[in-house]
Amino acid sequence: MRLSEFVGKKIINLSDGDILGTVGDSDLMIDAEDGTIQSLLIPYRGGNRLLTRGEKKEIAIPWQSIRKIGAEVLVVEVNDLYRERAW
Image 1: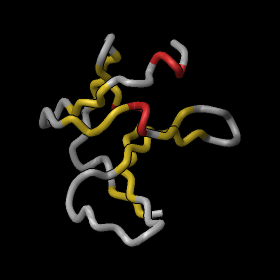
Image 2: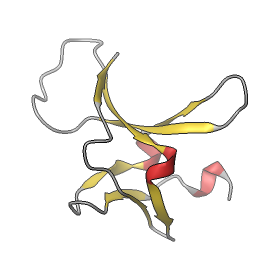
Image 3: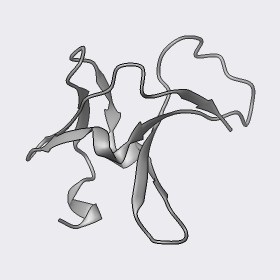
């Protein structure tokens, strides 16, 4: 599957049914040494939406947490595995 085929898919958390975001709004964290995908980085949409200018918050979802890739959705299973990250 090409990366372009992921764009537009909603990311659904199997653990609680939340829509975490859309693949087009996300980034990939790739290991520079072996080229493997480590995690999917999704913009953080919860909590305090008033961020300091230039501050970017993300949730890192480990690539191993992806359970299904459908025609319109990407199903992930994360509980406390993902962490809010501020850049």
